[in-house]
Amino acid sequence: MARTFTFAAPRPRGLLGRRFEPDEQLVLGTGFVGGLLLLWLVPGIPFKIGAFVGWLSVCASAVLVPYQGRTYLRWWEINRTYRRSLRNGSLLYASSAPQAGVHLSGQPVPIALPPGIPADLRWIDAPTAYGQIAVLLQPGEQMFCAAIEVEAQRDFGSLDLEDKESLIGAWEYLLRSTADSGGRIRRLQWISRMVPADPNAHANDAATRADPLAADWLHASYTELQQAVALFAEDRRLLLVVGIPYTPDLVAEARRYRTLAEGFAVCLGKEIEAFIRSLGHGQLRHVRNLDEPALGSYLQHAYGPDHWLDDTIGMNRTTAWPAEIDARNTDHMISRSFEGADPWYSATAWVKKWPVLQVSVNFMAPLILYVKDIVFTVAVTMDLVPGDQALTEAMADSTNEIGQADHKAGKLKDPRETAAQRRSLSTVQEIADGAAGIRLAGWVTVTSRSKQALDRDKDTVRAAAARAQIRLEYCEKEHHRAMANTLPLCTGLLRS
Image (cartoon, rainbow, N blue to C red; front, side, top):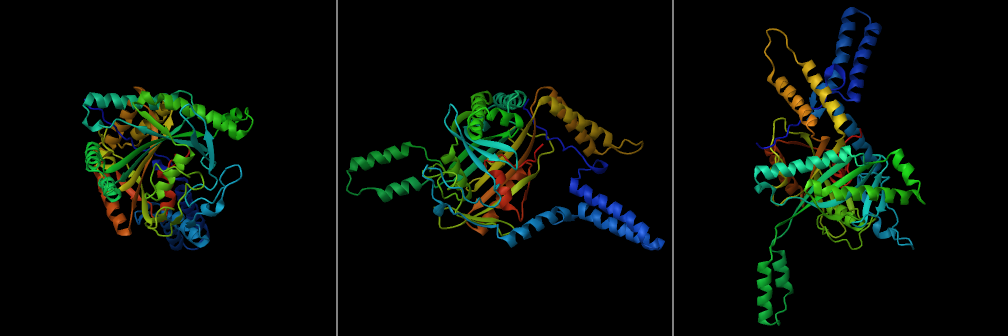
């Protein structure tokens, strides 16, 4: 029987069992307390009732009534931040890398970072047995992250059910062993990058550069060689980003070395090396570490796909960022790389709704595999939860679902409540059977050459996500911040 996955409903928290965020609770509490204050201050019983009901209705509407796809309270902070960013000019960015230069030691001079990227980002070069790897420290997130390029099973879709089961079981084992091993890695991020390529580019280049005076046998041999080489119309890359929290224990261990930076490099290098050695347990093949030039090239390519992904010459922490960014538009972001004269238009969406019904192991194939001729990135960030903690949280979710169910005599059962209880109990059973406990968030960035092409590609990606039973919501007025969640920064989830 094919394995299926069930996405359990999020654990309710806040007032009355509803999932209210702290700011929503504050507004509702202010409405109730303010209404009581108006009952005391306003004279006359009709005016008291009217003031109480009116004030409480305004506060409740700001939290509960839909407004432009969200609620007024959800838009309030976005609009406030957007207007403030427009006033201070931070949504316009021009790289100072050409004028920054380098130190006599060869180290690049730090420059200002693009909007949406943590301004206090720090780079560390960590040694491993597989080569150097660039580790990024984000003090705001209290997280170190490093990217590894991996290769998964190429023909996963054509495998039979037993082989698919074994591969998924191997990945679950890797997640569970990483979470329960006592190591420092507590976050993983999958990044799938798809860039269309011209299948005739090589032939056109060869025809342009061919020497007309060359011998016929040389032309014939080259043509035969070209026909024997497989040419792909797209380039797919798979990155696995590991996140290591910044903890006092890690700092104490790093202080044993000559400098704190050296200590971080050695300690983090050991953790990442141990994780790379365990990739075989998940049926993954290690391709390469993303050192500073490789990571810089990927970041430059993410903002401007006309920069070749494997062109690492001259790439470092200074030249990693695009030449220009314009994030003032509400529905897209414009960026340009140093190698291209034409800008690129990007928009980022977050996965608002995961499947609520049981899905097969390759349920995201319509989005990741079947979308053609579009430049886009799919990123899924996962927090690893130890088995005991995951089981405790799942049991609490199940108890909450059962407690909220309305079983009054003579009332029909709500099938949605029954399905939610079944999913929560299934999650408890899966974790008890050894499944890994994770919480995840997904993000999708679409990049196109023009605004019209971007609108078309956004609709194509949204339709593909719908076929995968996923609902996307584009992050209006904050695409520059949302795009950072599809970069190898291991972001996109709130810190536990």
